[in-house]
Every structure is written in structure tokens, then in C-alpha cells.
Length: 261
Length: 258
Image 1 (cartoon, rainbow over the protein chains, first blue to last red):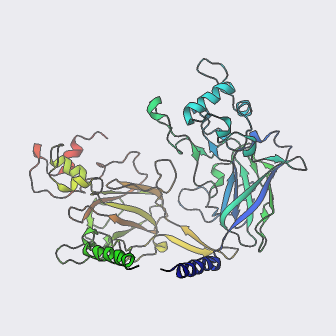
Image 2: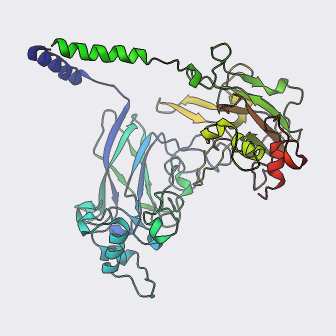
Image 3: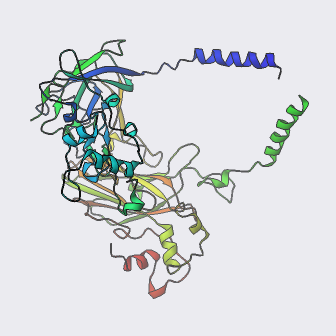
């Protein structure tokens, strides 16, 4: 092939990529969640926040703000909420100690001291674990040698920041979701980590050395479908869902200002 | 330029010399005719001992699904709701276990043992209101998926399968793997017709037939179900078994403590 022919073929290929348009109905939806400062004093108190895009709202079925659901099937106490899509702000991270399994949420702590203040635990001698001990344990467990390597610690990883009203605000992106006009953004914050299963997640990385088997813990799979299974006392809920507008994919705000009792 | 053209041409010609018939690799390959078996869909309601609630144990066998077209083999049966829970258990045969039993627990002469765990069949169990079933008994295997346009004009899918099993992580929607029993129980409305569906995903390669035992009983399923809960899902063997056992499953279960 001559160089001229090669160049022509390459140019044609490049032009083709510019014409490619899938016209998929799924879109990315951007927005922010807001938790009033009166509800928490620090982001460390906020569990993972699950944000879903739902067909409609039904505050009467369960007696608290909740999406409308499909018909009940089988032994489920209520029907599937059938979200169009959704995401979470924060995810469960294994905190290097078994006692911290399903306790630590990513994007909440800027330092190990902050984490231990929120989740204090004792070492084998019955003394409180220090930041140095936690660092050493994480170095052993994950192989991290510098605090910048910690996947769930650091100022740059914090999800929440104070907005101009003094409330806690975090951005979210719901990837590849159906976003029909009139659909609702609804969310809840699982502050006591009910949505984490100790039977899920990665098998412990030091299994051969420690001689025990456990999983690191991870969220259940049906949280956006059946949020009622995971909403417990002290969780924050959106009381007034945000309505999606036609042809608008960003700038939405969702306020979690209802506390489930 | 000529060399660059000749090399790919030579490679392409060499590849054609390696052409093989892939059909024998398919589970529904018929070695006698060289063709492919079509999917086998049985309507168990037409059998002499059709499954009913608290009826007799049903023993049957099914052929391979058509992998290429995605057409499943399988079977369906109906039963009337009792107004209480109804339990369905299906146990597909376990060829590897049967081979071990036949060989006295040591080395097996069966060449298919080399393929373990690929020599066992697998079928999945589902059930629901007969009116929601999308297949045609005796003709085509279906499911219990439905769809509806929601309030925002979006077409939504909903699974109305009532036979829900938990996976090993405790999440609803699991299915058992090869040669492993599946079961479920659910509330039924009295006098309402329900449909049970067995969908074949693979069959043992020794004879391309998957035997199974099926039971429908009133009430909740027992807390523990294993290979010996239902018996009869085994191949007849020509050789004699030790200790006077009639079949490999009986021999296995005689010493099985659950």
C-alpha cells in the first residue's frame, strides 16, 4: 500500500468516527445532593447516599417519602421501585481491621484520626487503636506505604463540602440512565450501613497469612430497587423529590432533609 | 510489495487447511446423522403421572438446547394453587457423582470424568401464574417477563417469576449450578393455575440426555435439600454395583449424612 493510499484510508476512518451517533436513550445525569448542616456536624456521620431516578412518588404506601412501586411479586413485602438508573455518593471500604468491615465509607475522612474519631476500636491489648497502628495495619493488609495511597483517606477524596448556606453538598453523576421528563430524583442516606453485606465483596487479601476466610463487605445489589429493606432509624430521606425536566441533564439539586424515625 | 501480498495469502490458505467441523462440539449434535437435534420441549401435563401437588415423584429426561439459535429445551407443568405455600423441587442428575459411585470411589473408567465439571447437566426452575407465562407448552420454552408503559411513557420490563431462590450471598434471584437441586416455595391462590418451567442449559455429554426428578408438595420446602432429597435422577448402568445396590444414587445416598 502506498503512503498516499494509507493516508486516505486513515483519514476516512477518522471521519467515520466523527459521524458516529448511537442515539441511545440512556444519558448521564449530573447534580448535587444537599444535607442540611442542622442534621450532621461532619460528613463522617453520613453513610453512603443512594440516588435513584424513579417513575413517580408515593409518600403514603409506607408512611414516609418513598418512590412509587410496581406490583408486589412473591414474598417481597412491597413491589420493586424499578429505578431508571442511579448512583451512590460514597461506597463501603474495608478499613483494614475486621471490626471496621461495613463501617467505613469512602469520601468521608481526610485523615486516619478523623476515621478513628468516628469509628473508635480497641487493639488486642484493649487499648484504643491509634492512627499509627491503623496505618501499619493498612500497610500490612493492602501494601500501602504512604497515606496518599489510602483509597478512603484524603482531602482530595472527600465527597462533601460546605456550600454557601453552610450545608453539606456533594456532586453526583448517574451514569447511563433513562431520564424521561417528569421522572423523579429521590435519595436516602444509609447512616447505619444497613446496606452493606458482610457476605459480599472481595475475599480477604491476607487469607494465606492470617489463615482465616472472610469477605471485606460490599453493598447489596437491590438497594435502589427495594430501598425500604435498608432504610432504618436515623437515615436521611428526600422528602420532596426533584422533577426531571425535558432536555436537561445537569444542575439538579436533591435535598435530604427528612430523618426516618 | 509482492512479498507482503504473498505472505497473508499463504497464511489464509494455510488456515483453510485447518478447517474443522465444529458441530460435534455442540451438545445437540447427532453423531449418527451428523445433524443437530432440535430443542425438546415437553408438556408434562400430558404424561401418565403428571406432576401435581402432593402427587408422586416425577422422573423424566430432556435433550440438549440449541446453543446456536438460543432455543431452549425444557418442560412445563401446571398445578392448582392450594391457598397456602407450595414447594417445588427439581434435582438434575449428577453424572460425576454417579461415575464415582460406580467405580467404588476411585478412578473412573468413564472418559467423561476428565471433563468434570463440564459433564453434568444444568436446568433452571421457574414458576408463576400460568396466565403470565410467555411460552407454549410442548412447543416453546418461555419465561414470566412482562412489560408495560409507565406513567412517563417508558417501556418497562417486570419479572413475574414467583420461584425466587437466594444466591450464596443472600441476594434474591440465584440459581443452582450443574447437577445441583433447585427449589422454591411461594404463596398460592386457591383454584388458580400456576405454571412450573424447567429450562435446560446443558446436558451430560455421555448420552446428551439430562435426567431429573421433580416434586411438587404443599407447604414450605424443607430447610435442607440435597442430592438425596429426591432420588431417581440417574442413568441405568450395565455393570453390577457392590453391596446389592440397584443404582448408583441409592448407593451414594445410603452413606450420605447430609
